Image 1: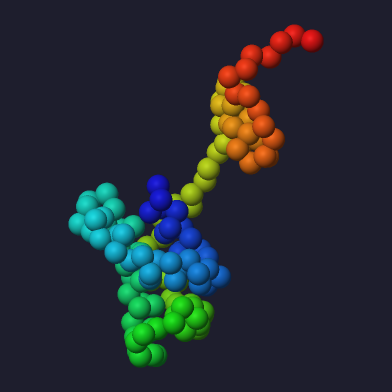
Image 2: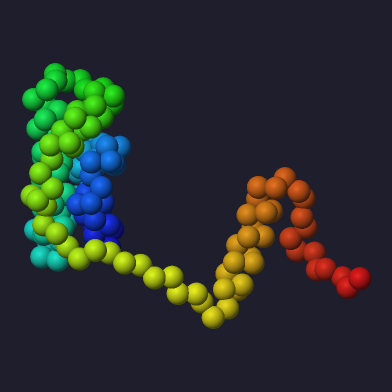
Length: 132
């Protein structure tokens, strides 16, 4: 699912997400375990194509060590010329929210744990409330 989300972002919004592309370049080794896995080949190929395109442009336009600002500027520059048609298109992702039958079983304890943790108001957790 995460690879599909990354692909969707690259396919439809690469030109307005230079920091996302920068993160992919910076963390490119996280995709190595997915190379050669049949279910991930097309997804990883798209990601690798983007990484290779921008990495080659960074190396061609500068000399190491590369600053974060330099890499980001190169990504912005070449994202305008990135041929969007090079990526294999997948069906557009659609998400639907399905509410649980009793959401309060999760949310009430969760919200109270956040209140207790971040409010700096002392609560006695083990104390039972008495009727008023």
